[in-house]
Length: 209
View 1 (spheres, helix red, strand yellow):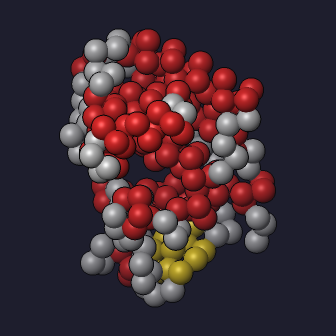
View 2 (cartoon, rainbow, N blue to C red):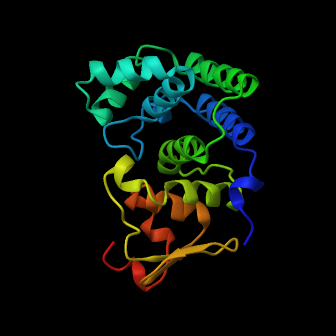
């Protein structure tokens, strides 16, 4: 198998995903902006605000969020996103596009883990609305590699534990145990503990998830 991380231009793809999501959400109506996302307690517009905060933030400002949130990362992210609740969605979309371009010019992050944050949250926002994000299997596989050993730290769960995950849209497989198969993007969402994706997956390993 090829090294999928080397095959992906992470900075460029992260910027592209930010632009795509900004355009897609801006094109929706107010009802969709206020619809529930796959993130508990977050509307679609709150997901967009979270990605804006991450794209604009420095390491120091992110640390400040954690301090203000009592060193509870999930709570800190929630509060940081909701501090932008009064910003109009078109302005949030513009800010996400601008931050994506600025980070691309200044180097940004070359790690697939950050790209995964944009990819997963794009699905969180769009899939409840019956839409999907445009990401190649190679991009999704790069995120799978980055998330594989860190899911428990980030999402406090590891649903892929004791399972063998097999992508059906490229040559990628990892793990041991009962098989779970599906598109690479759907396997990403499973590893990110989005149980809403289970109807998209197949195999004996789906039982019990």
